[in-house]
Image (tube, rainbow over all chains, first blue to last red; front, side):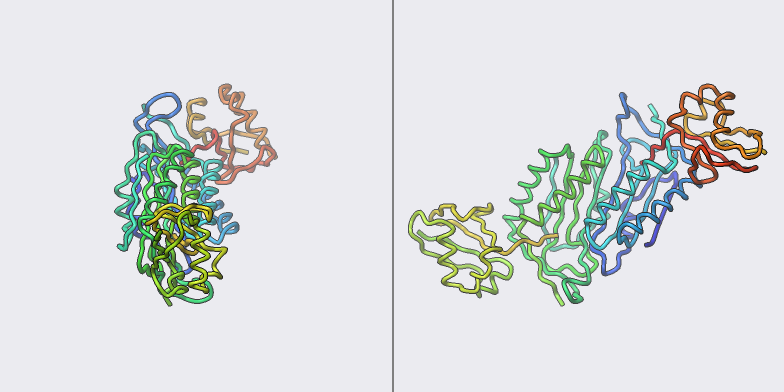
Length: 129
Length: 129
Length: 81
Length: 81
């Protein structure tokens, strides 16, 4: 399984990422998730979210999740981008791509990866009013 | 819920579609599915799949599914593109976008829509050796 | 009354044509039409249990009563995506 | 022995600092370190039940035995995505 992890303050260029997709002839499904900052957090309106992370541990924990992903499903490739720093409302903070032979495993793996990320990957957010 | 349905023989420009995404400030999740023609169908290697459809009924059935989608989940927008005619191996035949407040409903709606499409939308495929 | 029947996918190969017309008694149902078509196209009869049927752009069950001029479509299980 | 302790997210506000050093007896566990930190930073004690702890880049349980020079990180539940 090829892995591509980017933790960076720069905007996520989803169109460019999609254009760079690599799939072998046995693969039939690509599932993408874009997590976008919403204008409401808790009770009030916000303008952005500030993401802080423990960078080295983020990388370690994502790779442990990728190891597990590879054991559970026949995934050919995973690409994941998480922005840190300030991400404005309506901009993506998270982008995930899963390439698999069939859609069932691609959807399952993508959802599992995001759920687990929210449990163990040391990233925190702070709303910006 | 805004709906955008394209049934066309032209290639699916996924990067352009992603670039044209529209999301209001209350939306936090965009889920995409790209169904790509695989090089193996049944027993043997193939070079392409030829898609035939009953065009007017395809549109009708997709809109019935969109009606149901709208009842079941708080989806803001759905866009769906299905190619017809000859689609070569490694090219996308289907592209789906679901925009929702949270990822749970976006994933559920996207999977449901594809499952139902494969049950009722009159499109047929024929492998090209 | 007269209805037109359209075939899709490999049903065209089984019948050797894209479309036919059928003359039926008033109040005929889809089941009546299908019996008539099975006589005319014996190879189609083998698909009896995996045949989808629409009138216009909507699916209809076998007990649906046809009207003069109806456009009926017969096709195998769909395979989009 | 000496360990360094790093705080993340609002744990920095609760302690008023990013990192501290602690001098501990040999064979001390994470539980021992945490008790010491709760004395030093009373506001941190309120987070007792929702505190994640790592040594280096791996999560560790309270009974983990610390070594001289360990880098310990304390932080609240994560919220990526």
